[in-house]
Length: 388
Image (cartoon, rainbow, N blue to C red; front, side):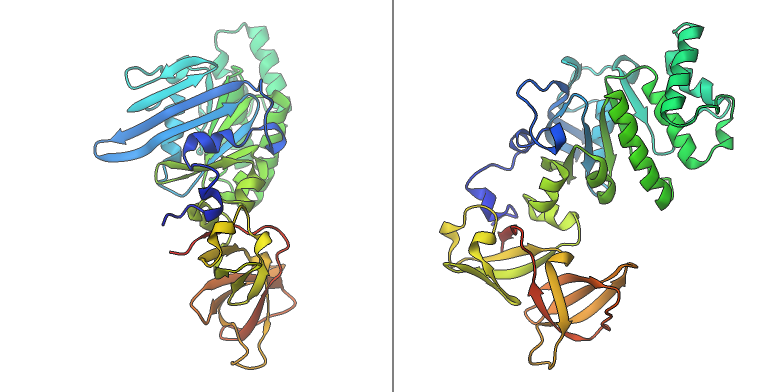
């Protein structure tokens, strides 16, 4: 059996094209039928000798949306961005920007002929140029008056008005990132590409810059594609998220849809702190080691799986725990705990070998080794997957 959830096996294929068709950018939901495709990736594969970095990737990015390609290191997301930027040529497939073919297996336009803006994780500002000169670098052919006006408008947009004559070395990391963003936006690109744009910033600045980026993109209306391994970043600012794994596109959709209804075990495991409870589907209920839930609470159709064993996805806020009054009563034992400030996250190993996480207010503390009783508190639909 595969890792595709049983609830999706009857209704849809798991290829990239059907995943892409299921989500659109407007408010995280579906686009209107006339939504303009700003960027089209069609069957793109990239090989390096015997190694395949990207395999059969198909994805549309819509006008004005921020799509984030999310995945672990080595999944192919950075290679994908380099293919879009013109820094790599696809082995197979095509890339189109604004209905213009810019790359296929036979030819590839260089970055300066694609009308794309690039923001790198290390900012890549020119140290010998001032802030204003860095921002104006991509519009060298414009008149002096036009450059001055464009630079002033962009520095106002990124909250750096008055910094025109500063050297990049005089700026903080967050300010340098804003200059890099302004420089990329100066030529009014069709698509803005962002490579791990916040990875070199400290945690506080990352949060601040995420909000700034969303504000700036909304103000300019530019279409943007970002790549990151940071789940919080992707889920908090993206119109849609495309999850990659091992060179393949696993799922595309609005952040809440991907998080709440992951279409594969990998997506479920990668997003959030996933736990899986062994469950037996009966006529009316799903019986797990820590209690039963209504069968109707499982996502998708379940009629033909009555009697089957499945793995039910639960996250830390779906499960509560309390100390057991005796070892005989215990469902499992605390094997690890993480203090996050507002809460503890407890890792619990159940007597049947399942492992789940439970989140509890910091005012209650349970030591490692404590026998505990668990209960499922989730009132939302629960995703489920074939038992391995």
